[in-house]
Image (cartoon, rainbow, N blue to C red; front, top):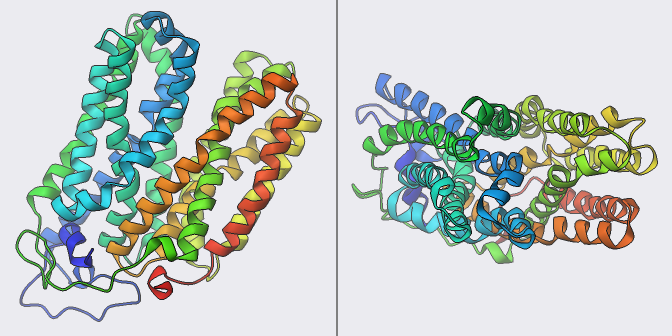
Length: 433
């Protein structure tokens, strides 16, 4: 894929102005200075990034808050309900791999716009399908939109803000964490305010997704052509192909992403139960999970900025995993006595996600490379994360306690540290052809 294939998100050029010299890893489309219109369009893109990020998790966390009511309303079996917890990772892996091809054909802006529309449609339809099959199909539509957004957001950031990858990834990650915790916190009270109907409580999130479509419509309407590209954005000069599957850095990033996703899904799915089994009340256990998720809001903004100032991000990966090890040790030894401390430590450990996103943007010198790397890392990573929550649940059921599951999760942090050190090295996938 040529870098120009993804330049449809670059700012408009001023033909009479001489472009400034490119910095390392910078796209030509981003180096061209623009006038007031280009600055206005950049602000629209920032708004689009924030709104898109806010919509990339409510489809999942709002359902978790109302899962009991959904099961009763649809007559859903426990097996199918358990399947719902694995569907997001599967959809992210399957649909995410198609994102670079779609971006090459239509442009990243158009694909992100379509993804937001798919999220809105899926969230609006699924509460009213009347059956389990329709509910799953509509959920898959929304998750497909989330999948392409997951993959292409690092591409948009690299294309538009090549010299501000850290701050913009931080803004994106912070908005994503905010959307995650917001949907988990307000879905139940909002459902009560809407009359107690779980259908209304789920469908209301479609409105936020519909709003996110608007800035991307403005971006798509202003699709400029890059130098050396045809009017439709198709490149005329191709760069040497990058073989992602032969890149050690790409594989290290993929495994790192998969292991951190495993830890995050186990935390979201099982941590409240660990506290409740230790004697913590249900209400307090829910608040503890909210505290864990809320930690991601400020830290997701700070960590990418810090990561981009470091030549090697491996020590950050090790430090975050060390917080996870301390948190798991506390959950094993004294889950109730130090509950608030363990919740904070697990919240810090979960910030490996924005670190992974930042490293994706830093490990390629072009937005085309970032597109390929993002699709590979997230698709392989989400596949790696699939068995984790199910295995933890099986160990808990068969052992009758949390000792083995916690030991498993603590053990997985060791290879996470190792691949984090490899992924954090100062190199580009283009150097590993």
